[in-house]
Image (cartoon, rainbow, N blue to C red; front, side, top):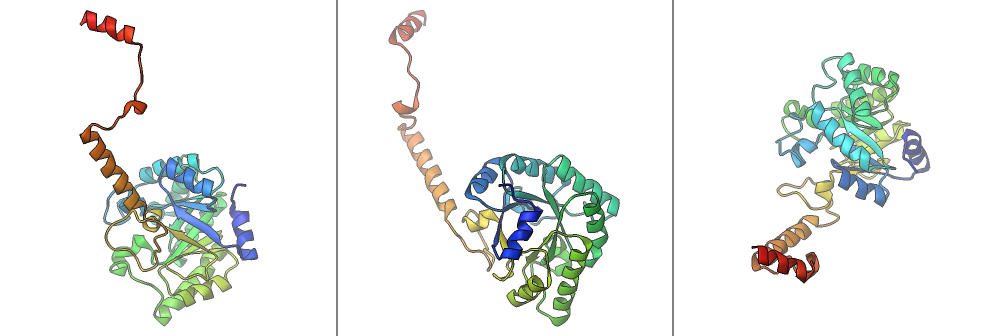
Length: 278
């Protein structure tokens, strides 16, 4: 059954946790969809995990449309959410609606996601008015990395916590259908979740949220270097890939691959005639 805004809302109301993962290509989306994930986020995190950038800021609308379209073709049932990249919605409301429309029309997204609270409520209202569902994003918002001075937990101080609660209520009033809470204290996320009627999706925000999202490369052990505290590695797919690739290299160099079972046969008389001609 196709996951929709309505089914996600029903999950919050019934206490059925929402599952969301990032994906950026057709094959991965197909696998996740077959596993029954409720939603797939085509995150601007692709800038780091797919394109090798230091952060999400260089990601373009063309990048997001390209990857969203690939995911949408592989996601028969998952609710596909596409990130709006940096400066695709901050400059003007008109830009926000136009770019959100492109992610739906050209990318096949079911919803768009943008970062911020009170400052983006006008954009949320306009996008929703254009019949495009909007997922909001509060807390550690990666597009604000320079303003934050790095990837830092948000909401630890009283004034920050108060603002996050107020922003959550404002984006809900503006028409957001869900909100991602990233990098905030678990108890604060629990308060926000209890105050909202729309689902909260946590990433580094504790288990009281209505659902969870992770970058799939992190949770499958595909990334190297620093792993955020909130990430659990559910598998070591990176080790499996390295083992398989190393074995491929070894067998190819040894001449044991391809073996006879991996090759195509031809009648001996065909070869005999060819050899005569040579």
